[in-house]
Image (cartoon, rainbow, N blue to C red; front, side, top):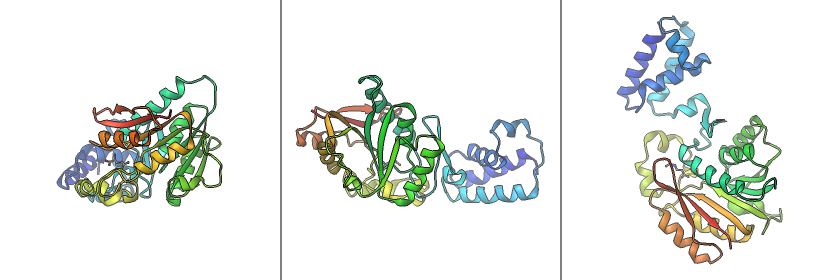
Length: 288
Ligand code: GLN
């Protein structure tokens, strides 16, 4: 069978299974399998593929038709123009999290030049936040996760991107991961993309997310904002004066989070940053 027939048939099949970008997904899966760029498919539209390649492609398309995310099928996801390895133990990096990186980098850049920042990345997952920051700044990052499986992915990503010396990975529940490290009052930046999907919203998530991504990385409890009080309280203890707590939030959560921050009295009025979709996505809290 020719490449073009394979792509058309796969796209039709995916469309019938309610995949929202069937043609693109078919092309991405086939070019991944052939270890080529997508353009290769068009340049070789009439080439005939071998039977064993077609068989593997069919299996991938079948999985995609069951809504397994493309990133889990290819094992990769691009974030901040960096390639990250992913598997079903970690949340797939989202473009909206780039707003959190930009907010953090801009504050690092507007501080003293050439200094080494000390940071915590809470709930690092595949390590996309820690790695993206470490690749561009002089930082020492403590990246934690409650999941050992997630940490084995983030460690790989740090190595692959040659920032493993800048990041120390720790396993544990929230700030407990740093017990015994004597970090109180020593941190310049705490960044986090915690789970923030409410129980009600969780039910409404697309099948790709709900069935395949780790619930532990998404589930923010009944209210969706279960993790923020702990983050804010911990930031009070771990941040230096004038340090920053920078957190990703979900749609419509900005006002509640602002209220939680103002209760603690240790922070200036938080600044809210929008993502590319003009949704309030990042809360920046400067410690007094
Ligand atoms: N943005 C993700 C989603 O809606 C949620 C990520 C998170 O809970 N931190 O799928």
